[in-house]
Length: 283
Image (cartoon, rainbow, N blue to C red):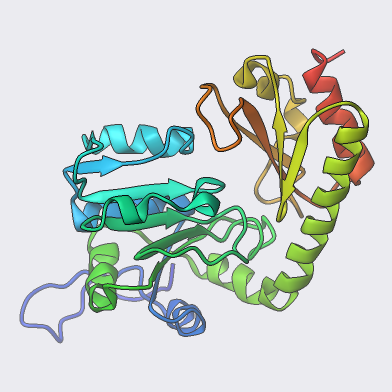
């Protein structure tokens, strides 16, 4: 957090400004029409807090923690004229939803492959993996439309106590130049991981730096068999491989899957071996 006074007395009333800093301003100048926040989930939370949707539509394979957040906000799911449409990767790759709800605010979480630019009103992104190299956590809200709301969102960020620390900003600025290399290396590794898993008899689909592995078993059970020490840990150099999962049958790929977000601490051969062990029951 930038060390400054909590209140700016230049205004006629008290205005809480803790959370502002020159480094935040610098990063927001790099990403036009954006609002920097502490984490990717904080980005989504602030969007919900700002726009206050009463109803929402989202695909069934939306990230589980996002669905939990929506329940905490008591936003009602509907298929009839929702206030907001929310989806993430890979569903936005098959974007057929925004046209179905022309009056809805379309929000996309594109944290997994930031080289993709989905058609939406508001883009929320976790910068933690690809941009800051897992040295810390950080999130971003980008306004593709409704740009007039950007400054108001920043005021709400400060008033709500979404403090972004200087060390978070410094991590992004330190790694920003290497970002193209990091994402390219992750994509190459993901491609090789998918090839290795397919050779082992699995159905692995590679898109960007993500690998989707179709499974018959309960994906949550499979994910929990990943050795604990190999799960993502922020503060290390680079993450290994994070699992998320979908337990239903109506998914983007028409099957249950685990989603691998490929990191660079381990070789593709090591990642494929560990995934294979988890899918075979951890033997």
